[in-house]
Length: 233
Image: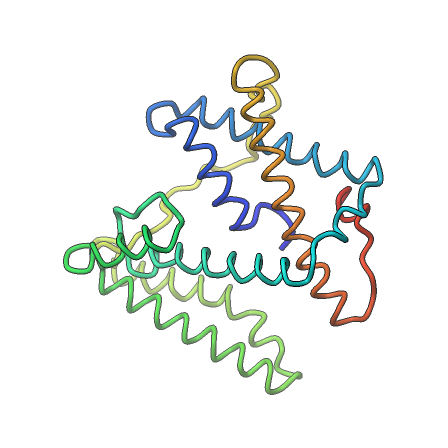
């Protein structure tokens, strides 16, 4: 996945909320998010344009593996909110805060219907992945498993009205394409410098993740990756 993946999203959410409260100032928060993502893209493209791809050579294999392992743990911990059906979950991403939030809600915050649905489809996904690995001709089983899970679980929740018993659903999604957001970017004012700094950090972390994925495939298929092309892409 090359794009706004979980690690960058968590990082952006944490850094942005340190500056602006999204509940009391939603418009300013959204504008700062647009500003940060704009400068994240500018940072990566500029590094590639000025042919600074050699920088990625300083990222050792140990650093990449450590980053990927840490990212996996952080993302997995964040999934506990949805898996256990916890409504009031911590905004922090460190393991201590997350586990306090999880066990602090064990008596009144966990939703057994949500856990049942989550555990069932997690088992289904793991079985489908196992089948795809054992028999290469059945690769399509693991490929369609995620979408199949979404369709079946949506239908199941609809006919049982599980959303009336605490199971969270997406609800309505506005139709159409989002309007252009270029006019909402801070190009002046006090938030310009803040958005610029957050954008650089997010851009570098996003690039690190892209390089980690690229190097994984490069090792499997025996080829080298071009740092400049990765940055421009």
